[in-house]
Length: 248
Image (cartoon, rainbow, N blue to C red; front, side, top):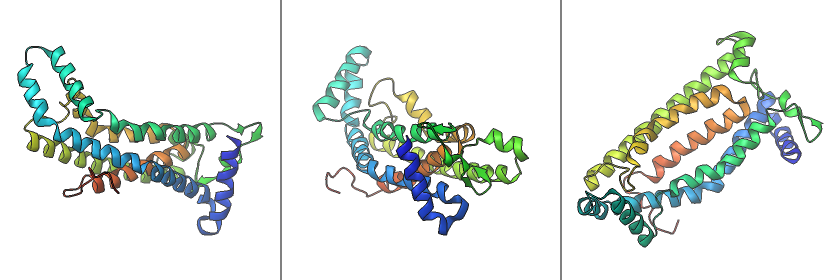
């Protein structure tokens, strides 16, 4: 933990001539971008996996017709098909799981006044007038929603809403494309996942809640990562993009 604090402080010192008091916030944004860049190969693999699952849909539809009266046999048959074709239904979760430690690290560091027995000087840094260790509730207490810190959060909420809307439209487009291609509802490649698939497009909007309740530094990580995901998905899942190829 102490090493991470020291690293962010040194990085902020390097950025200070360009970004002034917001140098540490900028360092966190760049740290997030580095994490997402490292995870990007897994995101590409997840995109290939999703397209491979879509390609299996006609065979899964046949299994549904064949085992319509035996849900347990249908589930076993679908799982056997995925295993045979080496397609994991949950491969898309791996990029998110690998990012969790970075988010938790930021959450911990900016939630404690001391780290490793030393004073946590990162808490003195700000994004404009909003302290990186504060939450939205602190901004509301300090000056209300239109105070100097409150306005920072209003801008962040607007960015999150725009990104969430983009993610929602991308999810809807992908769902419609999958249904048009296979003639089946997306998410039915694994029995029981249809309900989850219907909820997924709305999950980006829950980022608003996360941004409101976590320290501002952790909120910056979430916002940057969510924006990266939106751009990444738009690129990887655009029509004509062949992300099934193993070469990149």
